[in-house]
Image 1 (tube, one colour):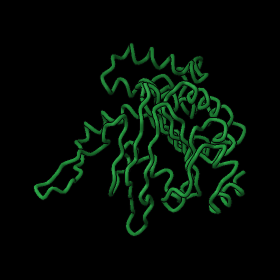
Image 2 (cartoon, helix red, strand yellow):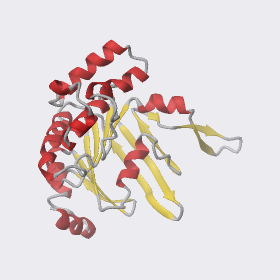
Image 3 (tube, one colour):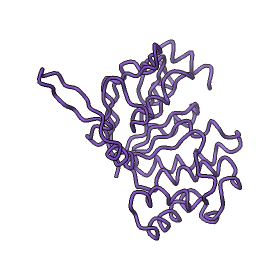
Image 4 (cartoon, one colour):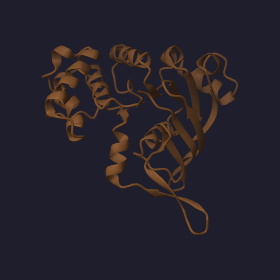
Length: 257
């Protein structure tokens, strides 16, 4: 089951540094969106704002029509304000939003199977069902025969595939991937992109931060170019990647192709 994503008037600053500056996006259910942009442009912060790992200063994010991390309250003065939800409520919302980190973040003392099953067990799924689901997901990412292996015995590409399986363990309606290949040796990139390619074809709503422009052209329905926290240009890959209209987009793509 996939879900829509809405980002409305998003603003986030760290001190005087505004890293997200008035971003508005509407991403349909089942779509694959790739966010491109130079380092420091706000890509990862925007991704983390979707599941409220990085609370916004202003604006709101919705997933499947539900406001994430905050609740709208209207004061006696009639001015709408957002109040932070209790942590347990935010954790419940995050269970619907899978997140694949740049640096894997696997538990080193757990096997691949245990890493994938840990989230569902913590969410109340019985252990046997969680482990059965974990085995299916490890098969899906091509590691069914390595279920009892610990992270240190995996290559970087294999660790990232386990991380993708873990992100799918709670059957999320949205999956966010933050530069999933940037920590990998070049010869390992292809195996991870293959798993993401299969995931994109499954109908799950995906938002991917990446520098892999050729991959973006292949899998994305929509590409967003972000610079200094603002959307400079967006559109289908045939438009934005092959025929960019903004000088800043053209300059960036000429450097990363």
